[in-house]
Image (cartoon, rainbow, N blue to C red):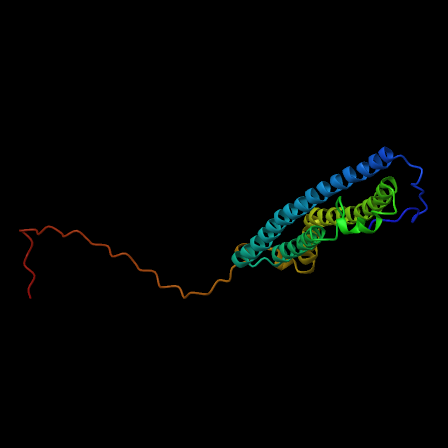
Length: 218
């Protein structure tokens, strides 16, 4: 609702109409700029949330795939920890992009109906300028809160590799055997009975017959 004259301690009765109109115009331009900043901030937060979510999903899927092939618990734990940490950042980015109450320039014409007879235009414009000031301050506090959540989400995503490295070190230190992939662990050999060696058969050449040798009686 448009503020009545002197409702906030501001006396507009002696203000020229051109001055009151210019003050109101300044407020309108500022509100329009805040609206553009808010829209850009929402788009940036949504884009960052999509990128971070894709990275987190890739980290989780990659760690699970590696664990499925090698059975490495530290890699699985570090991938899951980093991915979950990133998803927390994604949640903050989405929270920053959520719809909120935001003021923009202009007012309902009905808010001016009660002022049309007994209020000068300069006083009405001045009251609307006071409304704009309240809206600017409210929008500014919301923009700061959105920016803080977006920065915190980016910090969480940026520190996710540190969380993964710490988790990898903790799991590896607690179980050194688990830090080695299954392919590099000592294989288990089963005893197989040895077969007896096969001796080679030597074939002797046939001896030539001596015609003068006496016949061997049978």
